[in-house]
Image (cartoon, rainbow, N blue to C red; front, side, top):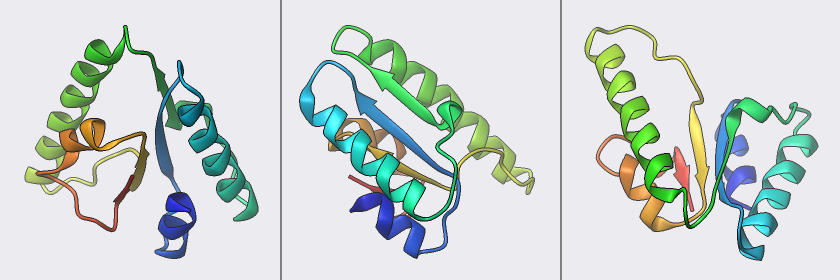
Length: 108
C-alpha cells in the first residue's frame, strides 16, 4: 500500500528498509516487492536493507551517514544520488529522515 502510493506519486527508485527477525517485516517486504513488480520496475537488491534487533544500531549509523551525504549534495545544489523515496519498517527508523523529507517521500 505504501509503495503503491509512492509509485502513484511518480517515484520509480524506491528504497525499502525492513526488519528481518519478525514476520511483520517480511510481510511488508512482500507488499513492497508486489507493488514494484506490478508497476513494471525491477526489484533491486541494492535498494533493500534488512536489519535485525541486534544490528539496528549499526544500520541507523549507516543511514545517518548517508543522510548527511545527501544533505551535503543538496546544499551544493548537486543532484543527490540514490532513491527518491523510502518505504520504512516503522516510525522509529523513519525518524532519521523526519527533518529532511516530506510525507510524499516516506510512507510507513
